[in-house]
Length: 165
Image (cartoon, rainbow, N blue to C red):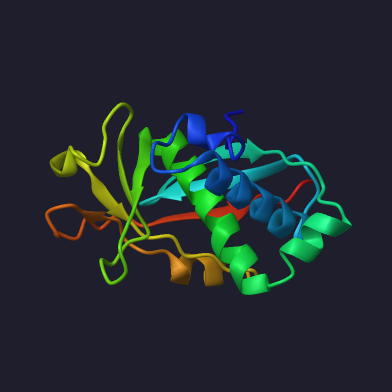
């Protein structure tokens, strides 16, 4: 089964520094560990096309949980790690830059090897995370990716846990 690679993302995503990528992965571990045990099989849905992937993490200790005690901050950063890892897996797109406020995006993403200088190759990518609710709540929060030209691409994505038997 393919894996969501939430660790060492800075080596693949030029728009993430090692510190930012590590912090996002740490937040993802805190959030995932609230409700699940590793490894977790996930359902990835890209505009109705479902696939499966697994994600693994190390259970966070007391210090890490205390550092990410703000649930909103942890959920936002953890969602960035999981969403970017899923986009990498499903579309071969990587973060090349954090987006400015009021752009309608969190990151600019592009195929491997591209930089922010190749803006025509970039897409705006909005991340939305939630720590509560069922699969229908997750689907309601799915946000369409926006092409760099500003056109709406009708593609909605979401990630949900697959219950283990």
